[in-house]
Length: 496
Image (cartoon, rainbow, N blue to C red):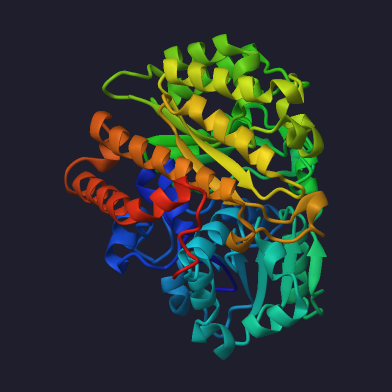
């Protein structure tokens, strides 16, 4: 193949169709291989020719952009890392790699690996991918892009990994230009800022994505200081475009997943959801399939339009045997109005920073009443965070303990407007941080067990459900002595 698109093993999975299991891909490398690969991160299915039946949404966009620009589909392979030697040969010009977390520096990986004291799976598998001997043997140019590309944008690291070019930002225009340079035997720049792609130039996927992911919006526009600046450019795809991508995905499976930074702001002109547009979106998707998932939403949108959650619940028939729940990721980040005012004013709009904690509480209540299970993230160690700030987050989580959810505490990672700050790590934890960690872990273990026990989840019936329940119980038992120390504000790692 002339062009090969791939990614590391942690991205080449549907995580058994369970949103929260995607966080396991960022875990430290301590689980037995068979459990990690079968329960948390199973491999994607392949066609007879070895190409993937479904692939990462970003890869499908690049594949579509290449075809749209004149490259022949039969000369482009989208392959699992285990199949690279099959597709990379003397005719191969370029290997394009999508990455979310190549060095394990992302919020989830850096948190879990720092606390666990082991290398993140993401880093291990990225290194393994680029160590494939067929790349060097055939003198293939390597271009790396994706949301984690910033981690590898260093010439010394690039030389170490054998990377020719890194693309920071969007890729549908820039990647095609770079690949044309390769075909024309032109030199590649080392590090490139990707051109922001106008809405009308974002190509329609040609083949199915993992879990039927459809990018219905790109960007965010809320302007949190700890986020990537390119997220400021918020735009939404027209409904006909989304329906076409849904049909392409349904041909390969039963489900679709609507992806946006806040699914509830589809076609919104400001920070208040456009109820009519969102309801029409879900109704049209329901005509195509009854198995609809979502990626992300925002508490401020939930509370701004609580009736919208009720209407989506009714459309999707949540709470029924066939569709018991819906889950998506949502950021709490902090319970401190001071930190909200300093770093994420846009996140709370149309509300005020001092209303944030109550907005999160009300949002959880609305979601709980409607069979939505949020996977909620926290940011620990924002620059200038004090013990008082952390205590406010602890108090907030006390209020959330009765609501079915998962809470994922993450260490601060310096990106966006805060890229000049330092990474937060376990050595900087205040006593209150240890309390917050213990509280979050207790909460998530409790509700993980209950969700698996109480909800009729098709993906986890039978043996997989038994095994995962067992893993959760073992984790809780082994962690209990450490959690007791953490609940007293004591680091469990000082004597290890």
